Image 1 (cartoon, rainbow, N blue to C red):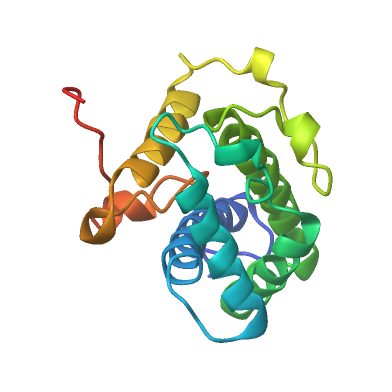
Image 2 (cartoon, rainbow, N blue to C red):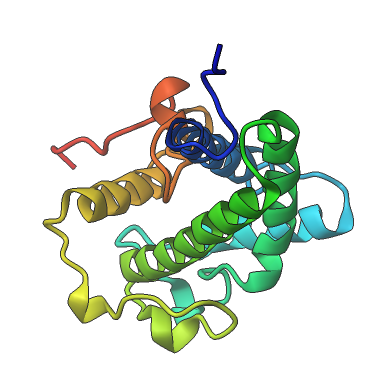
Length: 196
């Protein structure tokens, strides 16, 4: 009898890509909520927290940034290297019997590049910057004149991130920025009231 999940079959790859998406959504959620918003007294993690909290303090109600300081807007390659390693290692442990390491690495590289380009493009845009002007140590993104706010994904991302800045303390949510999913599953998605 043939196994259901043959190594590198279309079904195996489909299941793996779905798992990679969910893993990416929960990874983004956990890092944003528990690293960027919780102080962990380890050198790199403490700096990440401090930089991100500074970003929140420097964000005005209209989402512009005080003093036009764009230092905490973009992800650089060095930011995503640890995420790449953790993701490849974790997924290899779970899926090595049905997916080859080459496919895992190529898929994760693809997701990391998508994450960096989309995060940097839309995060720059929501704070009124052009990604290609401010994100020098990253993959360049889509210039702001080409961003279509009527696109369902772009609208979701912009509204979602604005709500992340809008809500405070215990009501804070919207930890996903690029890969929607975890916020909905864990009940932390907020919408800014229309009466505001």
